[in-house]
Amino acid sequence: MCTLFIYRNKLSDWPLLIATNRDEQLNRKFYAPSFHWKGFPNIFAGKDLLKGGSWLGINKNGLCVAILNREGLITKNPGIVSRGNLVIEALKYSTAKEASYVIFKKLENFYNNFNLFIGDNTSAYWIKYHNKKKLIKPIPYGHSMIDKHDLNDSSSNKQKIYSKIFKSLEIPNPEKNNFKDWKNMLKMKIRYKNFKNTEVYIEDLKKNYGTVCSSIIGMPKTYNKNKKAFWLYSDRLDKSKRFLFLSPFQR
Image (cartoon, rainbow, N blue to C red):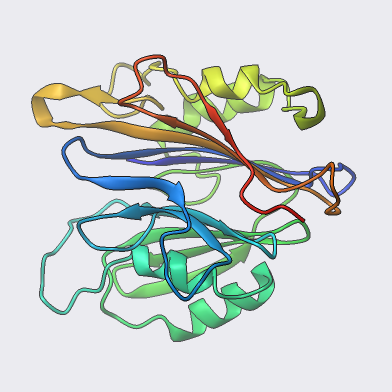
């Protein structure tokens, strides 16, 4: 299951930093982050080719949105709408506060379970949709984590390990291009008591499942020629495991 690490610091020049892995069927095709949505030139996101939505994206206004599967059975009922569409819908708004309010209000009972993250440089929210019940909460400053369980959930075996690891690592310094600790974190394969899929980087070739891409995203406090939203992106198919530096919005 996907993993999202969040660091918020209102005193920093980079008040929002996230790191995330997408875990999926290895043969499920997708496009790397780009401007894939005609009619919405301000949306920069990855695109899932099976359902047409996205798992992660940003927009020119400094909004960042990510969606993760929650625990529970996935139904293929014809009435079920792709959760990935919510990412693109949220990215049509200017602020995390506005996007979260609208998305939460509009949620209907035809999605599989999910966790939705919506954040910018001043606020961030977690929306939980589980068994047709919904919940929204602000994400606190400091370190937070989401996986298939709740935000900062002590019952999650993955969070039991990686929340401590996350808090112990050096915070990225975009000005010095220092992302070493977080890059390494996204490639970690430590398991909780050897329980399956409790590692951050998953490789289960027998089940055609694993981590297909990794991302580190940062939103600056103020935008200028030296500070822009950035996206470090690594694809599983790139044998070098390198992170490409993307800066789609030149302000």
